[in-house]
Length: 354
Length: 112
Image (cartoon, rainbow over all chains, first blue to last red; front, side, top):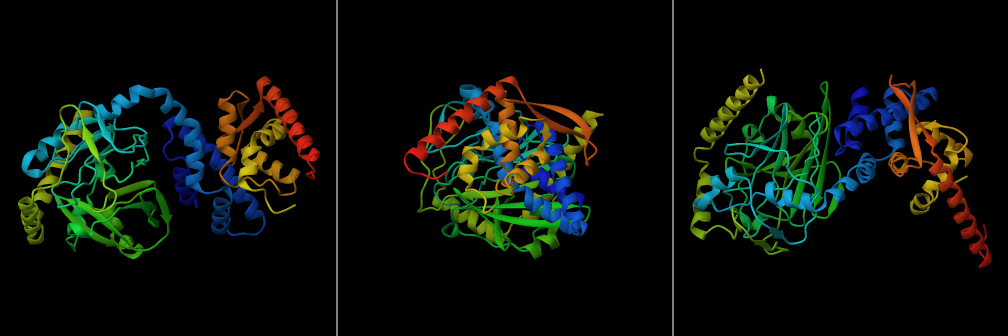
């Protein structure tokens, strides 16, 4: 039953600083075990007692939110303007049409100057990131962890998705993290332990091309909880500004080698795929979110150098990419190449450590 | 005693409740929840995830402090919360505020 409790603890303390998190986990664990003991004394099986204890203590996101309010926000407020500067200085990436400077945009990773993106709600960014040049944006936070944030690029998207990535850098050794999304944002972020990072893209057997007129405001969060071969997968579907939690079938969009793929995920298919996905306790997959073309579009204004406002691809480029995607040209080679590069990087890091 | 109080009422008086419970002696989280439930015959039932954030908030405010004492079921020291001097003063203030509020409600015809 320990993994159930640990999963709950991870969820309930998500986003807290590491030291605080451990203390709070100890405290909550003690509470859960006491509660579990109480139910056991009433004749419940260990499993049942654990379930009841977890249910009794409360909802993990609520606890997590309350604790973050105590332990995080005062510090965030205190950081004040400095944080804002770091937000804009380090944590922004903007997207440019591939024909212009897609790769350099990804590799630059730093946008200087002030950026205003409609209504925003920022908490933190990848302020500790050390960039590693690659076609993906790899940010090394600490040993064994990569927060990989990359743009939904080279994909025929609606004219005005949010061309930046923002993630909240509350990381810990369990690999959980959280993101506060601005309205109508486009996000594609993964947090993957470097040593066994495994891309969804390598596991796709079926691909559905999604044309731009099918894109909608949506974010799919897949929380994988897996421990010791026993897995519980929960799916959370978020619409911007609201959260719906339920099990079921959702669409996951992943950017694969510059292509947009649509995967239909369900509990069943996820379970079948979980080995491939290597989901572990406390992992979050923030898959993406963007705005519908004719819905609430985001007004993006940039002042300064180093970034760009994405105003959509030229029609000819969209057409070319559509053809390219449909034909699936060179995709496997690109994926193989990226995996090869990734392995090389991991090897280099490992040897650097030693 | 049931049902439980609306969340907003519980939240509004959480500090008073917790400080009152901890007034006689130090307790750890589970004990506090149990004590609150037991004293009020189940009316105050901390299961909404409000207990620990509130305890931590009070500690940050300087009204509570904690001590690590005997090992718990998880093999780690239990975290006992105690009132600080400031906490005692706050409790007195809050009791006074509550008495005034109760008096005011009575005076307009409300039953307490």
